[in-house]
Every structure is written in C-alpha cells, then in structure tokens.
Image (cartoon, rainbow, N blue to C red; front, side, top):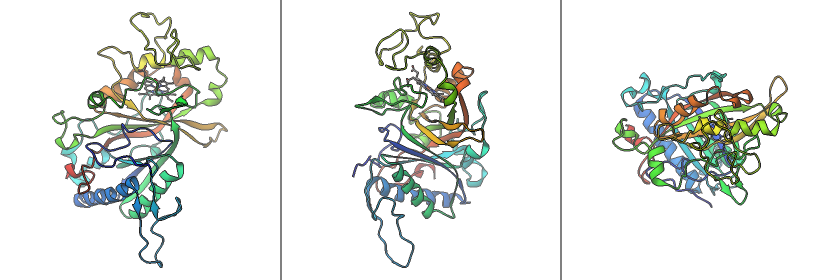
Length: 370
Ligand code: HEM
C-alpha cells in the first residue's frame, strides 16, 4: 500500500503531493449537541485513519450488510495515497453547538463575486471532506464508507469529483499538469516543500490573532468554476496567451522562454510582455504588498452536458491559506474583471476551516475545539 502519514501537526491532503483523483463532499450536520459533534469527529477520525493507513474492516456477522462496500475488492484496505481532510464551515459555529466564540476569525459564508452565478444547492455546508487518492474508485469507496457509518449524523449536501492535477504541486515525468483550457496549471504555485513558506502562507500559527484551537489548521476555499470550453477552443492562440500571460506550449511567462523563468514585472511596467490584465499578473503582482499568499490544490472536473447543450467542465479550485484575506480574498479581488472571466463561470463552493492535524493514535479531529 501507498500511504500518506495520517498523524501530525497538520492534516494530510493540504501540502502533501496531489494524487490523481479528488472528491470534495459537503455535509449538513444532523447532530444537535456539542458533545455529539465531538463524538462524530472522533468516530470519523477512526474511520479516516483506517482508510489512510490501511487495515482490515472485519465482517463479524455474515447476516449483516457487508462491512465494506467491496469497491476495492476485499475487506482489507490497501490505500493508494488516500487522504481525507476534514474542514468546518461557518455554519458549524452558529448557535447550535455553542461554538460561536471559537469561530476562526475570518470564517464566513462565501458571498458572490461579480462574475459568480452561485447555485445555493452547490454552496457552503457545515462540514467538508476532501478525499484524494490515486484512483477515482478509491475516493468513492471512502465517501460511501463515511455515509454508511453516519446516516443519522451527516447529510450530504453536494459533491464534486476532480481528476489529475491542475493547480497543484503534482509534477512528474510529464511535467506540470494542464487544465481544461490547455494551459499548464500550477507552475508558479508556492513550494509545498518549503516549510517556512508554508508556515507563513498556509498554516495558522500558534499566537496568531485566532482562537488558540485553530493552530495547525488552514482556511480552505473551494470554488466550482465552469470553463466555456467550446468558446475557448474558437479563440485565437495569441489571445488565449495574453489572457493568462503565459505561452501555451511551454508555459513560460510571455517574453521568456522557460516555464519556470520568473516574470520580471519591474522591467515591464507597461505590460508589453505580460499584459497588466493577464491572469498571472493580476493574481500575483509579486510586490511585497501584493503577493498571492496561498497554495492552490485544484483538480479538473467534467460533469456532463448543460441544458443548453454545452460541455459542463472546468476547475474544481481548492486553495489553502493561513489568512483568508491575504490569501484567496485579495487574490480573487484583484482578478475581478479579468479578461478570463468571459470564459469562466464560478457556480459553487464555499469557505471552510481545515482542522488542525491529529497528533497521535489517541487523538481525534477537532480535539482542541472541545
Ligand atoms: C496561475 C488558470 C482561477 C490564482 C494560473 C495559471 C493558469 C491558471 C493557467 C498559470 C500557471 C500557474 O502558475 O499555475 C486558472 C483558471 C482558473 C483560475 C483556468 C479558473 C477557471 C484562479 C483563482 C485564483 C487563481 C480563482 C485565486 C483567487 C492563481 C495564482 C496564480 C495562478 C495565484 C499564480 C500566479 C503567479 O504567481 O504568477 N492560473 N486559474 N486562479 N492562478 Fe489561476
């Protein structure tokens, strides 16, 4: 089995490498009391630990429904880099559980940006689980075991599956993955191997202006963003490249020749090379004051056909940040009105807080919260 460490100061699935498949599922909490929520998180910890580390799901009584759904063939769980990352939405901190004073300071319900057309049935949620693994059936296997274990405690609200690394750290012999607009995606992502940088960009630090329990957690943003791919495929190459600010084949910033050449905006103040309105220049102006302090960990998605006969595909955008404002919010605000908006439509997602890690075999998710 290929395992990603389950225990640690932070949850896996954030700065760990991106495997091939992802499934993000959002739930309403059906539990009503604070101690019931704590027990739910504890029970989830046990199941998610087993899924991540591998082991047996024994069948005690053959007259009962099978303990495992069988998607992976046996009762013996052989993970292939499965991670399950649990986060809470702002609504988990409402009056129900008495947790309002402990709400992460910046955690609010996501509101619409100018180009958004949010479908409320695909937004928000009390609890989010992000499953990642090497195969699509493994993330479905994990989701179904969670649903089977918690029918009276969690109600699934929406889900989205994604495939093959786009925005993230995945890079192998094939190099940086491409998104469904055909561009390399993830090139300029902050380096997840740089622990000092992750402490700044991703993890809430002890002593931050946050409730103490949040240390080791991270704000998680999910955005379901449709791409108008038919329209894009009829757009000239030069325009596509100016929209992103990178060349399509190599992925280099315009005016440079190599993918990882850093753009030099100081030497290009008028945007003759990398247009001022390009996606990369707006997203990350690379000045001390205006820097995108986040990591992107998105996937491509492909769902079906819209009622008007267009392909429903795009980006399952996921980002993690220690500070929602300095991370996603300021970055997205700079992107508002970008030329790329003609080709994309955000329609779902939400803001969540990924819980601190599970320290050891005796510890549970959310322990510091209760
Ligand atoms: C960079 C695509 C949405 C933030 C890029 C790049 C591409 C891309 C192709 C250049 C390669 C790279 O450095 O990864 C897209 C597409 C989107 C989308 C197709 C929507 C469908 C977003 C959103 C955000 C964002 C919602 C955050 C609010 C960034 C950042 C960079 C980037 C920070 C790096 C810029 C740099 O440091 O040079 N994106 N992106 N993107 N994107 Fe996006």
